[in-house]
Image (tube, rainbow over all chains, first blue to last red; front, side, top):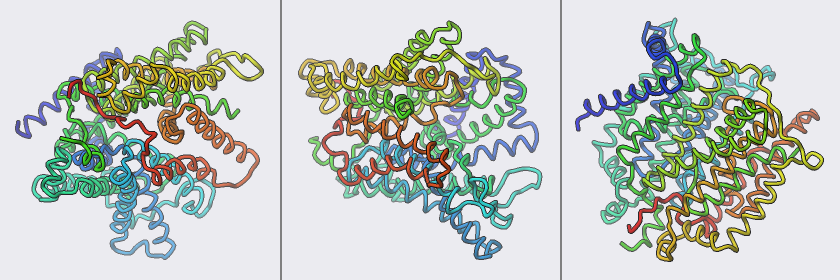
Length: 348
Length: 283
């Protein structure tokens, strides 16, 4: 099946689920669809809102694609997103303190550190999986909690604003924020960065040896082992890369949109990247399509919420139903590769 | 007060222990809890009886768990994928019905709370203590418990001994769902007497973490959940007393300990060996 056809099927399927969901909650379908469409695409402000919502979804979605393709079911995107942003905020505070906020490349430095923070957090879970046989599900749940508590601690302790009143960091100066294309809208350079990352990841997965190895390990660790590829090492790298992408998402949200961290910073983007990646069939370009659809849907349902009692919660229903329908129909049945120690002892 | 904070997490964690022992990690626990909280409130509000509310909450939690079971046990689809979807489904459905029924911010809902039985202790709290003891007995001494554990350790052996792996795992998942539904119902009917969007706020995930921390033993899981309740209530006590303490680190401590245990001993021999692995008959 070629890419266009798959994209078309994905879009058609998602629209059907949207209509069914509206019907299930007895919402007026034509009016609701019109409100959603207006909120997502009616003018440049609407397009901007859709793109801004798409950005973190795409980056965390790509993060999920990397890990899941290697057979590691990372559900710690949320923690990696938050930890990356904490790392970035520490650098931001340092740059402001050293009067170096206007330094060229300051925002690039922060983004790199965010990615490192996310990678580190994911690496812990990866190490536990590969070397200790601990389910990634369990370790990432723990790490998510620790990251969120660390954020609470950081913004009311070491990284708190100068005034020391509200538990939040100081607002970053304009020079450290990502460039915006239009003074009236919120679309920022991070959106472009996310799209570039989708292309980079496609090239990596399908055009490089390392990408081939990663897919092979996810598809069949036994074949990988026979070919002298160490599945554990590949999975550990995949996990770190996945965390880096989620950390980058946190950095982009921080530098592109909010400019300061508070306890309301985590908006579940790390979790929402999972359905986006799954509906994109764990393919980077289709994931970009899914991220755009759900970004637009978030922007659209915010508009719906202004005129009706229903709102963004519909998006969760659509994501859940679509994922269940997708796996139910296509059957993501392939058994998950086990941690290294176990595959070795399994007679085949 | 500690018991009241700890009860929802402890209940959900107790049920999840049974599920995980049978080899199913029910990631949708959070969703079952949230659905339990919402539908318990809805039923209690329309009938005026908190007891009918409890039953409705349990039913909602159970139904979601059975849906999860159908996808993962019958169809062999990955537990993480389906669990994530179940959580989103519960968040979306409860949020949407709540908004369309009770308005955007929610007119302040208030329903009759569960009455206390002895002093301040209510029926659900007593049930929690009894079920932790009871489930320990079931798991360790009864033949059903043995079969459940075998399914989680080595499903082929359970199948060879004449048990149905699918049926035993459905029992495990149903346990997780029933307890999660009750936990959610207790959150809305026992503690707050009201409902708010996403009111479980990650407690289902806390419960899953506590199963690991309690090393898959009901009594230890209960103790771990009480510890979390203690840490949470200490936070409010310290804040009320005006003590400047980094209480976030205090709350993170149980998770850090659980993680450290995993780093040192790994999954060890206590964790069910076939946890989260789909079982296909005759494979």
